[in-house]
Length: 421
Image 1 (cartoon, rainbow, N blue to C red):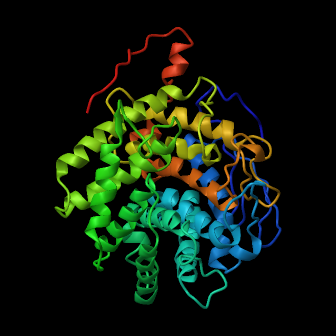
Image 2 (spheres, rainbow, N blue to C red):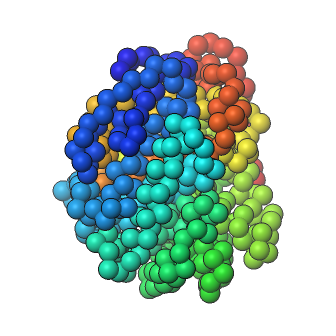
Image 3 (cartoon, one colour):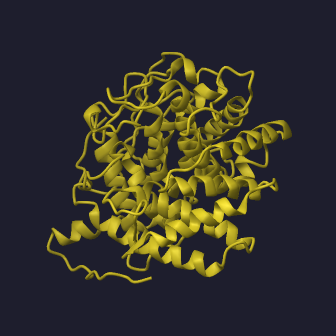
């Protein structure tokens, strides 16, 4: 495929995918390779093909009960849990958390629609297998604390497109899933962003008209609110650390929990409005962190989560709630530049298409003691804006420069001041 400059946010020739196999790598199931080249692709086509490439190994395998058989378990030497018990739920729950809005779009006969429908059918069978105790890919919700994290991501994904991802499931699958969620109450959440995981699970149970524990929701929300430090930043617990957990979890999960609970009058609407304003301010800072070349500061723990660092920007674009200072086109172009820097780097995928640990390529030393292959699929959170229709201004507006592109080209830019909400 022709390589072009990372500096240009223009149609850069996203590689086409010939269904039903993956683009430019081996199917983990059949071993078949596909190479195709489409030089007329748009940014949306690029995002679509890339997310299809990332998600396909996870969703195809779990649909065929071969996820545990085929997914590698790369992990650092100081890994501190049991990958065989947690990594598969990590991969599935985190993939669905990010891909849900795209899967939630109505079907169509376009090339994109066919890819989306393929993954949607994989998902429907995959979640059935995930909660079936007799299935080879029955996932672990019942041992160790980590499943609370990834069950919450799965719940958040289902709540992002419930009419497509939850309502069509069989009653048996729904009942089994709810049973798995309720036994997660055995886990005492860590005194940090984990409180939101407990709150998200209970919020989903409330949405599903099942018995739920409102105290777990209220405690999670109130503690995060108490840990707000100002100018769009929350601490992840009593002490502040400069990392991307405001992106990976805190802003998006808090806003989703508050929105759903305020709609049911468990929490005041003003709490949601305040959290949304804080998320908008944080997103303005995120956009300014993306360099003219599509890089961003490699700081803090969990840097292997890659494009999950830009979940708030993508979510606000999806919901048409970007701050007025950010145009949809500049956000699209900025995130696209990051995706190209991250996912086009040699070593980001292995020879069978699974993600490798790293930020830009394969960089095992950057892993944290809790990082394994499944952890990496949280990167799908950066793709939330694919839930917008293809004719949305986010996709259709002409390419626009993001803030740092203009700054370092000597062009006029808006000033920046702290916000107090």
